[in-house]
Image (cartoon, rainbow, N blue to C red; front, side, top):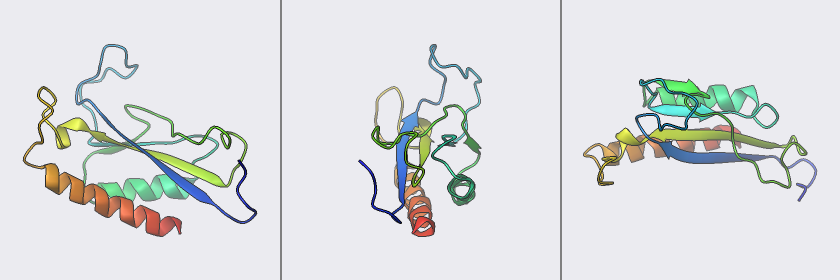
Length: 128
């Protein structure tokens, strides 16, 4: 799958992660950021990564890059092949939106969802 000449694509790989490290995770530090921005050496330019950090820091603290997780998903057909396909990962600490024992929404769920929507909308606007 190749993009037509002159077309660029920003993929936003979104996940959540537990507030406490799982035994198999390489980063076992207890303090985890509210937001993790993951990057890929080939597919992440400085502007989406730095822009994402700035946008998310307006709503969340702390925001860290490649901690506790790193990387950003890219469609396999483009991975390491098409430099016009940009990617960043946005991971949310689960404590911001759910009770990790029951899966129930926490009282701050709606505020967190609104803050995420606002930051992502600005990131998408910047990418256009």
